[in-house]
Amino acid sequence: MKGSADQYAVVGHPVAHSLSPFIHSLFARQTEQSLTYRLMDVAPERFTERLQEFFTAGGRGVNVTLPHKTRALALADELTERARLAGAVNTLAVRRDGSLLGDNTDGAGLVQDLSVNLGWPVRDRSILLIGAGGAARGVIAPLLALAPRRIVIANRTAERAVALAAVFAGLGALEGCGFEELGGQRFELVINATSASLTGDLPAVPAAAFGADTLCYDMAYGRGDTPLTRWARELGCRDAVPGWGMLVEQAAESFRLWRGVRPLTAPVLAALTGRTAMPGGSAD
Ligand SMILES: NC(=O)c1ccc[n+]([C@@H]2O[C@H](COP(=O)([O-])OP(=O)(O)OC[C@H]3O[C@@H](n4cnc5c(N)ncnc54)[C@H](OP(=O)(O)O)[C@@H]3O)[C@@H](O)[C@H]2O)c1
Image (cartoon, protein in one colour):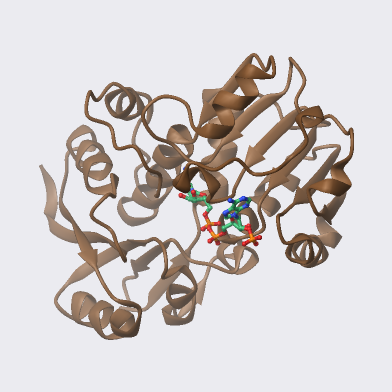
């Protein structure tokens, strides 16, 4: 094994469901990196204090999940451009001078899964992005960088979608609206960035959004179909996938930031989706 046993963790509340320790232990074994990676359940009011303790004790980096991604943004000494655009940090890394770099690898994870794992070119395609929370915000700039024809952000609370579209207006063809305003429009890619799947719900998007050739991508993941991927299939959609690939790819980006090596993701994705006791929920 190379290097010393550096310490990493995933910080969330709750966090017991997180698959990040499993994923990063496989990455470490594969790349022969000596590190430990653990769960840290931290209540919001103790976030800064607990992280400072962790880093003072020699911790080298953390993944940050709900509900702490904007707290992590405030804690970082410097942000990557993609974290600044995302308005949230899912990865913190201690640099040589002891300062904290905040990054956001969610968008890169989605784009890598779409473009490489699924072989689905985004260029010139029409995209419906459902949801206007942190996950949606994190993927807009990376998607626009691939020059889609247009992205429509639709959200249950329409004003949030309109406001989000305004933030990124200078980067490409983008609009925001409520579900009803979608009317009969059909899209080539539908991405679910809502947390509706976590409660077994379907976002109320019109069925017309899906055609047989539409790729339905749900950022949520669990055993088998999510409510949205199941519905899309019922509507005749040939390709409907949950967000396992995004989960593994965003983790690989974090690992690369910390360790300087990007692990192979295919074996880890296969190990995760092949697990007999997969969790039913979804969270990174
Ligand atoms: N695969 C991955 O690696 C990965 C990475 C990041 C996130 N995710 C997943 O992405 C999802 C969203 O995370 P987030 O951080 O963006 O959450 P968030 O900031 O809390 O945003 C939640 C979004 O979901 C919408 N929503 C919630 N319940 C809904 C329902 N029943 N019908 C329609 N819309 C509903 C909200 O709409 P309102 O604005 O109207 O409340 C809001 O747009 C989670 O499932 C998370 O696990 C996956």
